[in-house]
Image 1 (cartoon, helix red, strand yellow):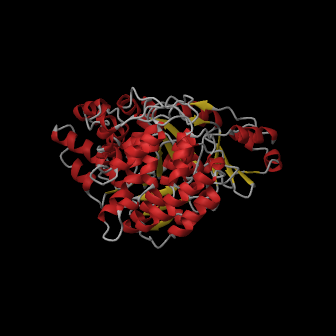
Image 2 (cartoon, one colour; image 1 turned 135 degrees about the vertical axis):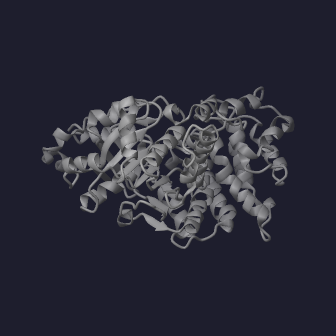
Image 3 (cartoon, rainbow, N blue to C red; image 1 turned 120 degrees about the vertical axis):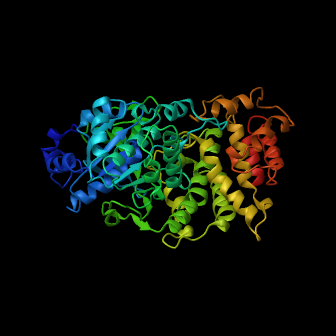
Length: 534
């Protein structure tokens, strides 16, 4: 079986392999999308293909929606050229359930895949943004996609250049998006919702701030019409809803690849993109999924509530997002990622067989995190974290790796741990000194940056935009050094851009230094230190 339109015509082999096919007229969907596009998504990675694209497929299967999604890639078109176009924009989604069963489904809801570095695609994209039918765009471009400055707070050269050139030749991802919003402004100040679905605190606010920064710069320099900035700020025209998305989607797994090939599916070639993402014609993901969105859509929206998406008010989304990102999942994932890399693990599920690591994440979640969580009402924090620790992380059929989760940790630390520290500092009843394992994770992350595991073997830390600077700060340190390490660590632990707080002012800096010194003692020190403080 090959993944293309022609092969889907013969349904028998697909059905024999237990692969569900689309239940809608795809040609009619493609025609409707060309004529009246409604949904554009930026970021064509695995989470999009396994989650938002699958949601729209369900609506198409039910006859509720008629149009598909136009997906857009900003930098580098590997996934468009190697995956989408050769396979007629189809994806084979594999769901790895905790009970050992596997769901297989061809996702056919993507109508077009466009590259923002191809003139013809850019022209098409401009026409789409000028269309009155367009209702929403969504984004999964990762936390760092919204950054307009580097780790030192300086405006990125690419952004500074865009600020001076205007919308016609923008190069930064958000600059290109803002230029498309300008096309919509020129087409009649048409309404639109811009929905960030990235795992970062107040994602909609971050997206708005980035877009607004471009609009301000271009307005001040007279590069756009004077009314454009007001259009960006007019919530009756443009909205930037908050959202919380949750679905673990690891890179394509060799075991899943072999399983598909044994079932007769042959399009399983994997590719590594220019930004080190792993892609294939198939995606593998867990069954559990959550998507909560602020219900503010000036131009209307797909009926995603009929697929399990929860629409609610801004305050509730904020509570759900903080519950998940700051306490009930993401900090636990990061803790396992850091210690997993140091202790030589290659699967999250295997870490959940280590009683020390289980106690680590249980303590961080239940004891240190839950006391500052505000119950959002629509999702129970207790039940959510129970599912994470008892079902999702231990799922032996999920090939997720600590190395994947460790990517971009510097961008995650402020939200996943800094917000909890700030909540303790602001509390009248909680003492920040009761935080024992969160500071240990922060110290372990600094130890991880040395690129030496607990056995003394070198490893390559996962990609991180701040890694070059951070590794230079720790240059000269070696496993077995005895310290004290204050002179080296003080500039890092006091940096609010890294930890969201000055850890010394928070009363935790000295504790992190002590942990770091113990973790550096020599081979086996990571495991010994972990066991000492559990």
